[in-house]
Amino acid sequence: MSAAPHLDDDDAATTVMDRSALPPASGTRVSVAYSEPPRDTVVDPLSRWRRAGAALGAAFRSFAQRFRRIRLSDRLPPLPPPRSARATHVSVGVVPHDERGEQVLLDIMRAARPYQDAAVYVANYAIALRKLGDDAHAEGIVHFALSRMRPDNDGCVSVARLRDRLSDLSYSGTLAPALTRLSAAGIVTLTVTEDGAAPRVRLRIPL
Image 1 (cartoon, rainbow, N blue to C red):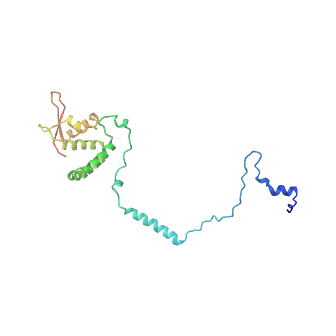
Image 2 (cartoon, rainbow, N blue to C red):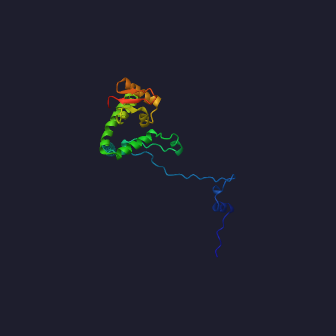
């Protein structure tokens, strides 16, 4: 067996263990930074043809978006937010406006063709009323409701029946003032009996 080559003490320490690999006295390992080859960070500019192609593609996408077939859901308002069971049953018989609107849309889909055709005219009439203000909108609602109610034998509609039909309208805040303005305009006639019964309304000018 050949003898191992003779090494001095300093050479052996240098060869077996590198001092830089030893952990520092604090116990934290020292990270060794490795040098990376230099990289070119300058981005080559796009050629004239690539810039023209990108601009042409963006213009085509914008043009195609204008002529995209619009879905029915794109024209409808967003769905109403979910409500808790407690919030739903706070006032019995009162339906939030957004949920009422959802029911209206569903009823139109299920209605007979004559009512679907009429819904277009009613919607345009309601939009025109809203542009005239809250009072005109309230008067239009009352006028429309009376026009779609069969009168009693005396040709009148009791205010009690009208209130049931328009249960979501405040009587003192909206319904009664609207009836008063319609009476002043000669559209309806309000009659009050001496026995203290509920007032009655006679429609003079149909909608």
